[in-house]
Length: 225
Image (cartoon, helix red, strand yellow):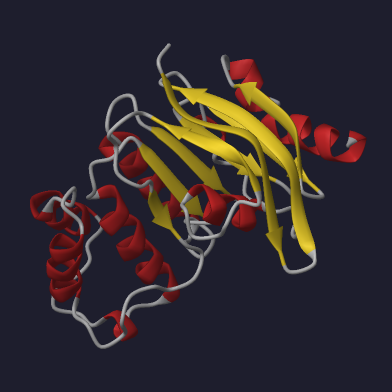
């Protein structure tokens, strides 16, 4: 399989916290990668470094030649509250050449979001739906999502899982961090587990049995790490 995204012995320093040398290689079969770990394990630090927003002290990242920077969805609000949803779409199209206005409107329509509403009038869950929709409207080969499903109710979560699956481009790699595992097992094609700044597990999720045992596998890796 063709390699899409890889890290070779990257070290990231964030205040007093540091990620130990981390290496991984993700190809087109990696699909949606669940990034798991306890609070403070380094998930956000790693995603920000992979997105190019935090400096890497040493080591290298490899991307498919000629591709733009990864799509990054932070775990904090990034949209101006006074903007209407339709204005957010216009702004994203202005800044990102890989952004599809048509796809964005299709996504917000599927989620039942009113394009005339202002960001600051949305609930936290609706805001997360909008943020995720805007990222999925971009056409890239690497997506980095930091806790995109944390504030949504179970019914909306299931809808978002289907949308993530439906709108990611074929062959793209997505690293999605979450504390939720139960109910999301079918979303992931592979997983990575961080513990105390170290990557302690990287596995393909190849079968229904693997998915059913995913939460236990993550717990065992952390407790044994």
